[in-house]
Image (cartoon, rainbow, N blue to C red):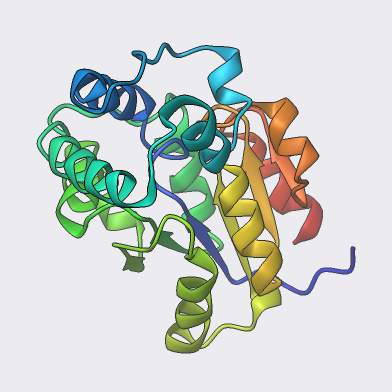
Length: 213
């Protein structure tokens, strides 16, 4: 793929920078009795599923109940972000990338939770811009807004995410993406999507950027 000079790297938060997958599972399990589904265990089977596949195969809720469930999940999760850690190696990787690129955040998480995670882990000052409250299935719209607001061409940014829906959003927008294999979706599933590049450990991001610099 012919790649123009990258000027900015935009990161997803949950599952990419912050280790939060367990929070989502715990929140979902707290509602299992109320919504009548089996408790969920973190397993390769779960991580092989896209979020839509997970909803269809494990929750099996109608549209209205799914909306109500999603509202409750967001409320529960918002209270469980104390002590969230970033993945080992992320801080050093971000500091290295910051030397040559503008760094940003684009996440479906809230502004409050995002700032708390970044500040608690000492990386808040590394990011030049932040877009929060993005729809879980509509990041492409927010990516377009980011491009317009920050005045980047789509070839000048690189998105870093951990889920199939991140890859889908980037494909719709024409923004290249590095899929990381330490987050919500497994490497097997991510490669079926597929992404432009794959990172198996945080420092791989630095090495990938060197090849397209």
